Structures are given as structure tokens and as C-alpha cells.
View 1 (cartoon, rainbow, N blue to C red):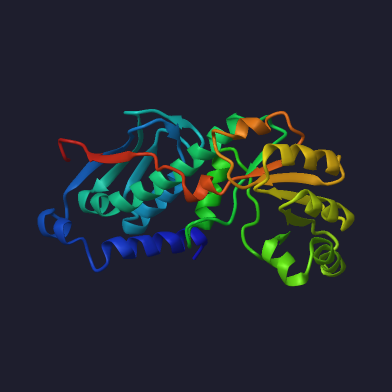
View 2: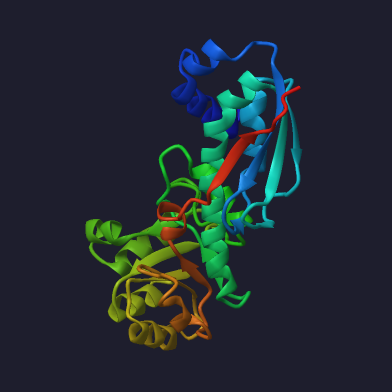
Length: 277
């Protein structure tokens, strides 16, 4: 079972449990119909494959027609998906499919808004600030919105953070140990909270220097200190109101936790068409 299948199975188990009491009581088993999913606000669509898997997990005989694809812009009132088959099956998958579609489209939309504010040379990155169990899908939504993925977990990248530095006893010392023990092909990134940290990071040979929660003046000074000797990532408190201050600065990455942990869901609805076949 792949990651998407596991996530969907858990979501359906959570919602349906031993059965949909209302639907099972009043809807005839053989009743068939057609429904559509409609977008109720503007955004970037994301989650079509997940919706497909939700309905197919419930009933493999359902047929789905997609009028839009992931990454396309959608508008209020626009129909994006048609579902045909047993009404019982459609209703059982309604809420789970809409939850995934709304959440993932919200992340893609939030990411895309930031991407549009920056030149192509600056990459918007996500973080590990994701909902437990949903990281695989949320990071997919970031890519759909035009962003790039930072680490998927603690296992696929070296990022020396503040607590590592406290435990080891300094920026330079932490880098020396990491450089000595890390695989030769892995870049080493380190978090810095001051200009003194930045200087130590350069002396320690960091490949990427993360400027964490620095003011715009500190960021500009750090850029001068680094002077092209390491890649630069800016993080901490970045939002739509202050990101424009970073436009034009020679930085490589901006990581934004809010695109996953605080993205506003895009509203979708499912409506059963009348007459029913």
C-alpha cells in the first residue's frame, strides 16, 4: 500500500467507520446518479488524484471525469469533477474527497501567491510544519503551487538547528563535526540567528546558511558578509505583507511554514444532479 492509499484508508475509516447510517437507511442500493464537484472560490486546484482514489476505494465501479487538472486555476461556480455511479457510494465519499481537495488546493494557492511575488531565481520552500500523517500530500501541494520541497524528514538532509548548536557548543564546532562525519555528497545547512553566527558559519564551511528571524537590515548585512560564498535561505515570520522587502536581494531560498500550517482551505461542494438515473 502506497502513502496515498494509507492516508485515504485512514480518512475513510475515520469518517465512515462501520457504515454511513443515514445513507444506508434511506438510499436504495441500486440507485444510480451523477454528481459534480464545484469550486466556490478562486484558487489553484490540487488533489484530483486523491479524489479519484477516495471514490475508487469506496466503489471501483464509479466513473470520474475531470474538467480541470492539478495546477490549473479555478473560479467560483466552476465545475471541476463529475462522478457517476451508485448514489450510496458517491455520498459516502463526499466529505473525505472534499476535505482533501479543499486542504490541498488551499496549500497550492497559498504557495502560488508567494511564488508570483518573487523572481524565478528565488525558490519558495516548505518546512516540516505539516499536519501529522499528511506531509507527503501537503508537500505535493506545495510543488503544484510552484514551490519546492525542503527536507521531507530528518532523514534526507542535514540542517543544523539552534538546539543542535546549543547541544554541541557553537556554530563552528557543530559544522566541523558535521563536515567530518557527513557523506561527501550531502550539503550542510546551518541555522543562524545573528551576524556573528553567519561569520562562524562561513568559517565552518557551511554550504547553505539559513538566516532565521532576522530583520531586513540584518539580512542585508548578512548578504554582504556571505558575499556569494554560500547559498542563502531566509526564514521566520515571512508573510505576504513583508516578503516584498526581500525582492531584489541576492538570496536563493525563502522557507515559509505558513504555506502548510496556516493555508486557508479553498471551498468546494458536491451536488447530486436531478433527475437521478
